[in-house]
Length: 138
View 1 (cartoon, rainbow, N blue to C red):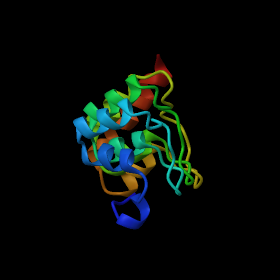
View 2 (view 1 turned 45 degrees about the vertical axis):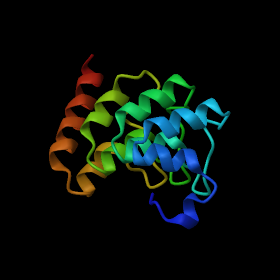
View 3 (view 1 turned 180 degrees about the horizontal axis):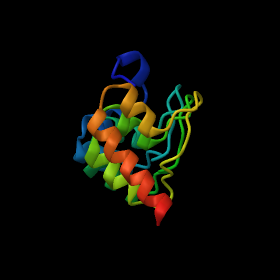
View 4 (view 1 turned 90 degrees about the vertical axis):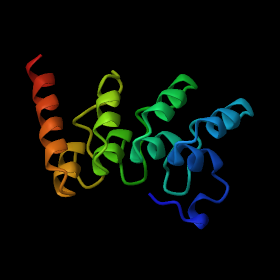
């Protein structure tokens, strides 16, 4: 996930969501941009908002029908993107939603917990692991 002009050319909602710009996101949604449009990597705007920790944008996208459980070509969910970039608030918001599965695996068999750990986000990994355990015990 990056903001290179070649990757995001033609994907203004992805760009605005990743940048955390509320007004451009709302404007694009008002003008019939598809909230679940996918870029060449099969990423949706909610992936960008999660990957850059913009919970306010994630809420807006959800209110406009974003597929919270959408996966990218690599099998990443919004939770994978948030955890992989150490965004605890985004992870916490996502985990409140019934469609978010903490055990979801990407194409390499990794969960969001695994990604956080792999990328050196040890406190987030531990927090996610505790959430995962709490769900199993509930």
